[in-house]
Image (cartoon, rainbow, N blue to C red; front, top):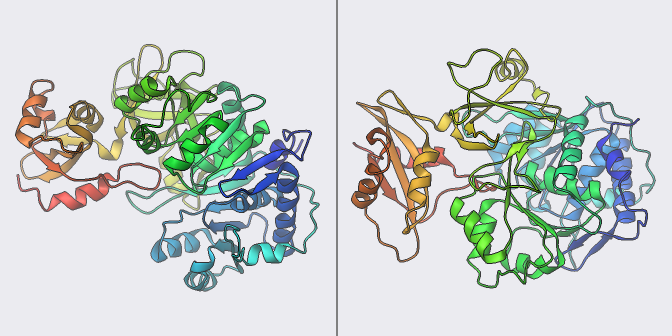
Length: 512
């Protein structure tokens, strides 16, 4: 049996290939037959280039159906897909291309000059352009070259351990690492998610996520492809467009920021969501306030889940059953999640409600970091668990809560302080929109707990009042020594707060 991920998808395409696979915001329509034939053309093009076995195909383009088809073509041809964030600039792209040594680079037409210069200098053999087709616009050299290729292609035979993709981590500390994911890693996760989220006949996915990240490329797209479901493809999140298409959809996946912005629009109501059966949130923590407000406004309970580049999805709140706000749910079938402290015995897990390091094991866990065997070895325990770098706890029912990243742990005066606990209390204050708690260097304490706060429009709250409230709720060593007020927290493209930027910004201002 062919373990190629595309072969798995193709086995689940609808019998009627003329049905719609992708509908775009500007009225374009792609049938399942279009997907089959277009991916065949691109796969034939890639194979005509005489690439090495396991060649990397690096792609930095704007979201479009063609970008997704290129991913499928790469799978079909047996090569390794390397998606790159569209926000990456010259130095970042230079690092990724030099590290991964892709033989093919595909970029947006407007970036061809500088990207091709980097690519050819570092040994790439081919550079193509790809643009989202629209009226009057050139689609790019990739589609032009593929136009004369055959629309028939026999998907390459792959083994379960063959690489399908390399995803570079965000690199908030140290240089980015390429997580190597196999066909089995991705297929096993897709099959589990199809079952536990109860994908069904007639489902329509509202797809507003980017395609360079696990969430949009794997979790969302794989779900629809494996279920033979139509996708409504938006180039990016736009509240007006999402609200327009919600009545036509049944499933939506997003980052917490999407749901916050939807709640700001009074058009969001139960009637608009009448056909929706599932809203999923991930990639960043969902505030309990957002969880509750969305439930009250729409009658829909957001399902929060947990995953990362190295593992795809690890846990999920249940489809049928209690979805606990503030948690990321239960371990997926076939996945083992444990929480361990320095005092935990080897091979054992900590007791319920004990905060510690999250470690995971399962068929979805990556094969290691690209060309970094020593780093890979460091990140796995002797009994095969991957150290996620996240800190959390399991409750009595097995629901996992993420407290933060281990790198965000603050050690103040010898005490461990977990930012999430303090952020939750600050976020519950009626004047506060959101907050981030960070550690700043301090001569006496080593690190001083510091809060960066965004207030709601027209709200008034001073640092003294905020600190006084916290002192009545938590131990004094957890109470921020300094409070900074800003207009907006810095976030990456997936909505995660960039605490490293905050630490850099406020360290010089912090003279405690």
